[in-house]
Amino acid sequence: MMATTARRKPTTTERGLGHRHQQAAAALRRKHQDGAPCDWCGKPMYLADERNWDYDPDLPRSGHLEADHGAMTRAEAVRKGLLIPLPDRLLHRRCNQQRGDGVNDHLAVAGRGTAEPEVLAMDWPW
Image (cartoon, rainbow, N blue to C red; front, side):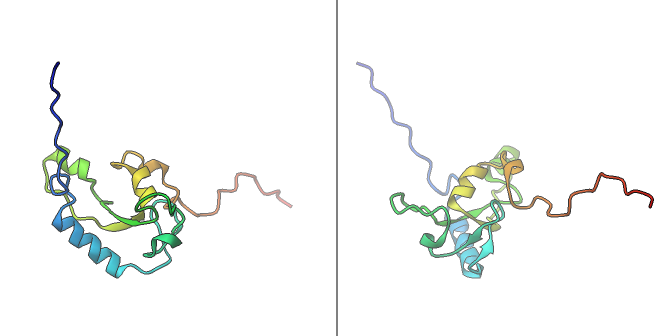
């Protein structure tokens, strides 16, 4: 019988989520104003997990606000060989999961222009 070796799960520090990240996330939570819109979905965000739209009492940490690397994702920093940047915004947990490593940014509901649609009909001259 062949023995399988279990792969060690990377630590939070190895994944770029260590002490620096946790301190920055705590600072973002301290500065957060309840009801501020999520950059991903546009819905209000609250520090109390049960007030957020993605809260499910049967799922651990659901409804929690997560620190996100909006400017440069962790994956992008690793690919470029750069120091992983500190998180710069909070998102709902589900929104952060949907965003992934940034490849889904074009799917974000928030941030799309709210300008009036261009009128394509020509006015009559009278």
